[in-house]
Image (tube, rainbow, N blue to C red):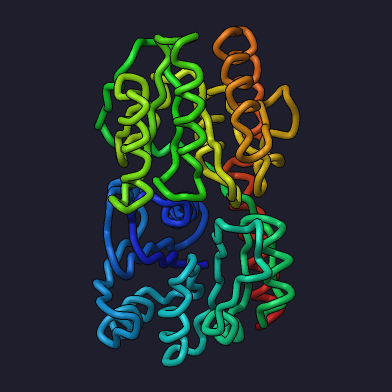
Length: 362
């Protein structure tokens, strides 16, 4: 098989990282694995495996015929069978299929606001789905939505998977005291609910003054970002809560922390939880999206209801006060991630599904 991933950018979002993960994992499994960034490059460029063919389309507008024909040339020169289009990159994939009709399109749905899909309407996506050979959904709610709304019947649920991609020598030296750090890896978006985490830090600062909170993720310098930083300043938490932006080597930061937190109000299947698990961190997360499929019991982590400050504070207190419990659930989550969310497991299922589709549509 000759498969190319296509994604709008190589910034450090979940969809972007999964595009890189698939390209890297497939480079060891198939004849040809490629990765195309259509609109913008970013930090993830350095995470691409040397065996992956890479192209930057330099797309400048929604319908950019120069980019479309550049993509067509790449696909023809490399005899590509399948375009695996992530998120909104489905549009340019459909445009190129108009002039290369033998190309098959797999669309990967990474939509993160999955708690209310009834209001999710996208006419261009619905029409484009007529040209899809198959659809991958990252959680069961998205799979059900695709079945009811889109015009492609070949739909599979495949969870995200994690690769140990610490190829960068970059090392971030975290603030605060060693062995007393709590980390949150999430882009600064409203749905990630950093406000709740800052409120928890404010409640806990007097009882545990040496413990600090470390927030990693893309800062969009928007109203939400300004609100978070103002709140930290107003509560005088400058020596308790730290913002780092994006990093090319999150593993370096995770290794310096003792607790991982994700307080989101909405998720699909977040890579952050898998990264915490891969680094044996004990985790506190909200019961949204597919998180409960990763942390299925209190032996693997602490699940709390969304937007519950008291529950978040109590969970952090419990983990701070018991290093033994932290170590136990961190190890159990590591074993769960290795067993159920490894690249080997997910990519094998992916390739079996693709072979069945190709046989069916041949």
